[in-house]
Image (cartoon, rainbow, N blue to C red):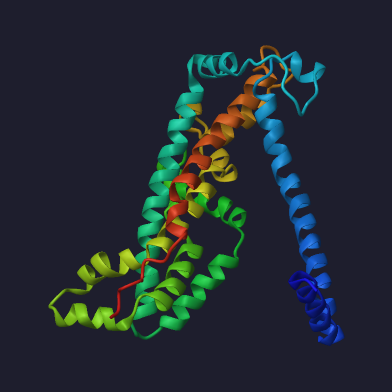
Length: 305
């Protein structure tokens, strides 16, 4: 009798000795995994298909958009489209990109700093009205941002800030969600023992925050910066309401303006508009790829011995 045959018989005996529920658990888990995989695959196709269409369409000429398959390449004219894009209307698209970068980087950076200061204070300092202040922040998170556009316009018009960079920058520097996230992360990740150790060593409160707390809170701060950057980069309502000068507009307002000119005189070709949309997405993709390493590991390891 072979050893292999003996082992197989023993495996069959062990399997038969298991309870029925245990024997059926593995097929059920396998079915669940396949179901989850199918749902995720459908979701991935749903979200990535428009991106694929945008990428493919940006490589085509204006005539090829209507004469070729919308989801596959035709004549590869991406380089020509990009040259035509940045030469359109005296290179106004480059100015729109620069404006958007100023709004997004400046607003997100200041918003992240303010959120980190406010969140850390709400998490680590006991003072009268702390819970009330945090509840006000939570209430502000629930307020839809479009509801504030008209009041902001009326307020800025009184101080003559409409149609200036500040009309978009100032509202972008405040993020209630950023304050909320910073407060939750600081309360969970910044140990009180580390703060007390810094005080014993003679460090001031701001130095403790700048040299210790901010380093521990880096993953949360990167998340706040990224969320605020994306929100400002893709914002349309506030700039279109505040800005009338083409040279101050961000790329979102500029692309929609080109789109609205379709069929009116010398309008911008549709393939140029699609290429403009593709180019406007590239900075967001690069930012995600650059900052994703901050989410892979926590930075609190070794902070408390």
